Image (cartoon, rainbow, N blue to C red; front, side, top):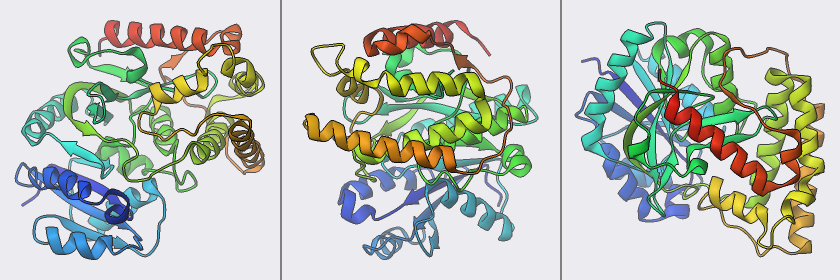
Length: 364
């Protein structure tokens, strides 16, 4: 019998990085299988025996797909979609999901009802982002993101809104890949993630490509679980710096154009001023707000120089990589002031106010 939704949970070495917690997370996915949903565990070439452990524990409850090597988060979801089509399976909605999410099974039926209602309003297709709470502090972790006019990305967490304050369907720049819902027409028309974005900004690129094809990204005001961010990747600040800045530069070159590129370069040049414009490091505060759970080193000269080294490498690869040129139209973009780049405190306040205004006032 055809089911409405396929959730692709991407796994990589979760047994060694998360231990018992991975079972706690996946148990909540098992609980939604009988709710018109198939859950696929897509193993991204794990080397720690995760696939064997998880397939033995969840065999008969979840569906499994083992990839030969780690192809990247987005590529794993794209391949899982193609595999289901080759198998003759079709779904109305496809979800790419992290494996460090605790779902609220009782909310999935409500989510499906919301998606069916959205399909009537947007019959051509859409990308959707429900709300997730942060597993560490209970505040909003995820609910869609906005991109600014320098290629920077800002989540709802920055606005410090509560779920009760987010009551409206809202157009957003992009739906975070942590739990991204894609209508079948979208992926059938434009594909899914671009494999050159191995990690970070793959969700941004996909949503911008979708906006260009007139498929909107929409925030759904419904909390469907908790996200224990970075539990599976164990990412470091240095890795985040390299991948995020390189991919941000690729996005600017491909989708945003010359003026955003100039603003991005100002962002880079004014980095020392932003860092030292407060007694408490603005960079520490930025990471705390926008990437909760990312381990930060004790900031000293050595650590800043290491960040700088990764940044230079990111700029080199971002400028020398071959990309196309396709402008995205209709995307909600947060406007920033050139002068605000000199102060992280001013920039955060400016963007926070804009996100709050858009999220509370714009109704889809």
